[in-house]
Image 1 (cartoon, rainbow over the protein chains, first blue to last red):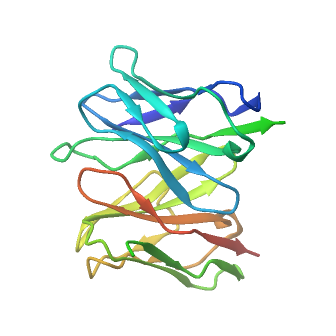
Image 2 (cartoon, rainbow over the protein chains, first blue to last red):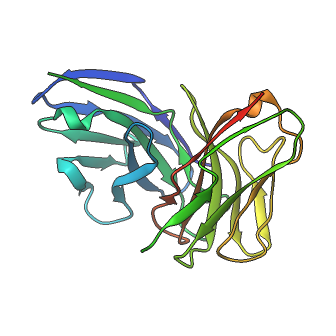
Image 3 (tube, rainbow over the protein chains, first blue to last red):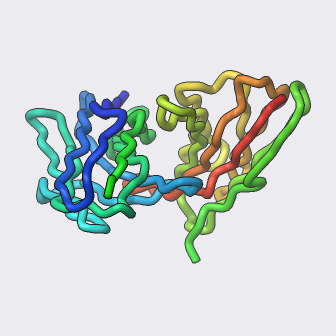
Length: 116
Length: 111
């Protein structure tokens, strides 16, 4: 089965600074990777996804992530954050159809706090 | 509008009183899942279903039941709730290959 580790539980950053949220995965097969965002008292919303093709993936709200197969990582980046980016961010992994146990698994989350 | 609908959004109940949280999706997705979210633990999968009448345990299935009699519905049943099942619950659906779509969540308190 797949698993995900988010390396930072909390990331404080000042407004307009760059940010990187780190995610490493473990899998014996090829993977699909996702980043979700959860604003306070809301459900989860997809930020971006990697299914195949270019390893640099661009998502909504100016976020991007890079799939690095050799390092089994999928770190999320934004060059300049806003107060409104304050939220919980989740990395998730699943396997393509045809593999056993291809359900989606999530990391423990990273709380991003953007300070003025 | 494509959506996953959970009900109720909030529920307070007493230990041992059976309850059902409903989940419905209108996207004709094959896969549906239930997760619970607890501080510091992220989302942990309770059960998932790959199609009608096909379900399997996730990481934390104890104390929960599910059924998938129709493609659109995937209810979560707590036969005898206990305080350690107090949590925020999410239902999600997806195609075989693709992102998950989430409901708005159900905040359950068992006293």
